[in-house]
Length: 75
Image (cartoon, rainbow, N blue to C red; front, side, top):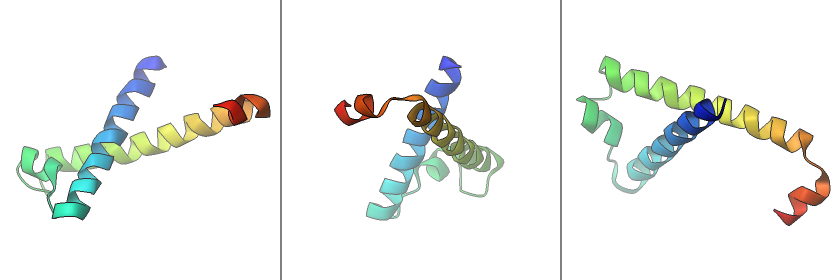
């Protein structure tokens, strides 16, 4: 499960950086690397980033439910 956590976190970071670049300079890094935003590889990356965001949100929700309030306040 740790591998899934690390891989999905990396993909969420890639997606966040891509969105930041798009917002700041209208530059799509994923599309540039994979030859356009309509290529199969670029679409696969976009889909994996979206799935990774759902996985990370689910893991965060589970961690928050299992944590005592005091521990969250000090974090």
